[in-house]
Image (cartoon, rainbow, N blue to C red):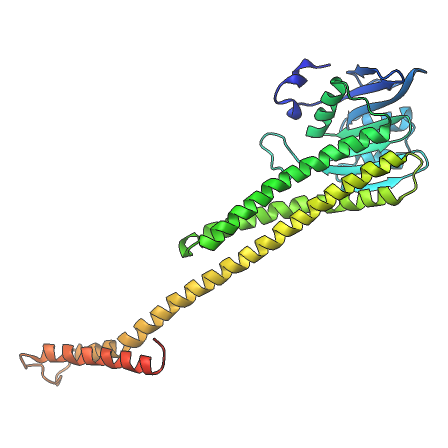
Length: 336
């Protein structure tokens, strides 16, 4: 095994292709190659992790592992959504996990395709996925799952935990935004609207892939599959509970952000109304004065008191009286 998996960035390292064989005496053989696995009499099952974009993967699934072309095509498809189906031999599950790759957005979730039957579990990915390397580490340090289904459920639980961890961050950001919205003033509204929009887009993207996974585990729990024992169903129930909580938390944050957006819109409307109110008052007060000064400023003969020494001050007094009259009228009309 690659010793570099022990470093602090192990969750970001490529960990495929490789295979892990679990023996009946609870030991493990790890093969760092793409050779098809031939189980010995002392082996129970194996886990093979592959890159679905590799040109040889489809042929390996069909010719060596005996999967049907339809199943292999579903596992190797470039564009997928979370889904689940099964046939007489095994189960196909396509899930999405949080993207922890450097320079990537967490909501750009990474696809993991899984085949589970009685003798093997095959996982396929292209981009690096944290849970795969975490599982690699767990096995390296002594974790021995009792069955392929238990290995799958352990990976699934880790994926759901990663989603919930990301949602905790979203919930904290939502709470921070609530404080900002309550205490914001007009100058910060546009910046806050951008923050809210960005967080809402993140929630929408994560929920797009998380909500269908809730349906997947609900169907998996209800279907009568030979691969599932009572312990498996208990684990599925816990995973379903965790992913249901994740969806509910996303809905909670999304609804709160909608309320925040409406409140900011209301504050902006109030601010604009106050501004327009002040502008209207100024217009009402200065329109008569503008008309008076406009009349007195025209360059024609016959303007009254043009040669009178105190005519300017007289006009100023008239303008003050007009302003006071305007204020009195607006108070009478309850505009002030």
